[in-house]
Length: 503
Figure 1 (cartoon, rainbow, N blue to C red):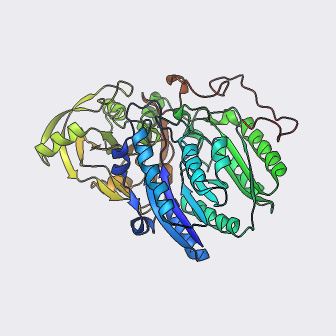
Figure 2 (figure 1 turned 30 degrees about the vertical axis):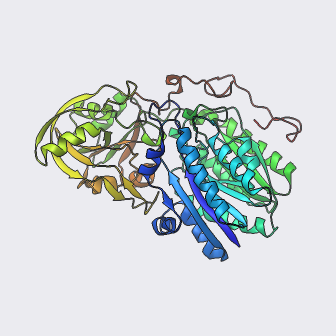
Figure 3 (figure 1 turned 60 degrees about the vertical axis):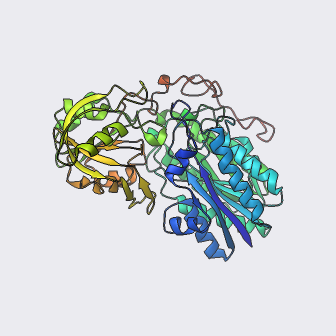
């Protein structure tokens, strides 16, 4: 049994002015062939899960391509076509194959295809025909389209946010494709998309409302007729017609049951939609929390400029706030500012520098902040995540410096990245558990590593394109009406869900 494995993934924020070109994918790291195995074997990633499946079932895994880029603006036509052409050529060169395992995101938008994941699946399907099964993993924030469902035999989404189960879901995909190849399973999926487009600040699966929704999905999966239940919260800033919440129930040759169960679960989620609102503190509440610190650390997270939601990473608003509050024993990760990094490296460790920090990429994330500080450390910006999320995965921030500004240690980097791991601080000589205040840019992935060490966690929303306030964004392509943009949106199940519009 010969099965191809590949990953081609991006989460696209259509409101970002930073295009995602081929260089962006190359910067994140492109692994090919046997290099995929060497680089990703011991990581918490989909490719590692595919490798686990190959060992478990003793099939030949054909590794072709593994690449993803930090969320940003639309993927250029050149980038997608270059990578997809390489993938298709690799499949062709592999000769006769029995199946294809893919790691996709589900919220990629390209200049020439708004449903880029659907385009990838369709392109592969057109090449290999209907006789070769395709099973793909998806991110929990996927915007799932009917085309994606139609061109894959099975889609399996992550069940956790933070996404700590990527490897496990990929192993599940590997288990399933073996059964499909042996004609032991006949997947019949049903996709239902209630008209809701929640933002992700309250989408963590350990708490409500997603905890109950995922628990219900797992109970449905316990039925012997059910192969998989995928719940995707969606990714609003992609601004595509498919944006929003999705439920896929895949049964073993029972489309009627799949449709019934999918509609029931989607309706359950719809009734809990208001619980996705809120969860963000005011800056005044953050100031009060600073004054109330006992042992710390207080983890303050600016969700307005989250690189993993497509923010540029160069907002200085969190530093501005901490300086105004005269915070001490504090560190911030991060501010992307290659110009300031270069000046600090030229000045050298210990040198005093005058910097205009951040605010250089657009006018949507606040103004630059004029500061004076000293260069505390200089590094190449490379480290390896300890986990649990992306454990074993290397990160490259590019040349990076820590600038000490009135006692606040600020990590300034060449590249934008969301800090999801304690090693982002430890790599730069900062012990996060010893701090009173940790400032991060993020939304939810930080919780896997930082919540266990925190006295308290607060989300705040500075200016930017990645926060919870959707009224900041000028949507043009999402289907309407859709909640919460349209509070009067309605969701009703048709008398016969097989005859109704799944959306």
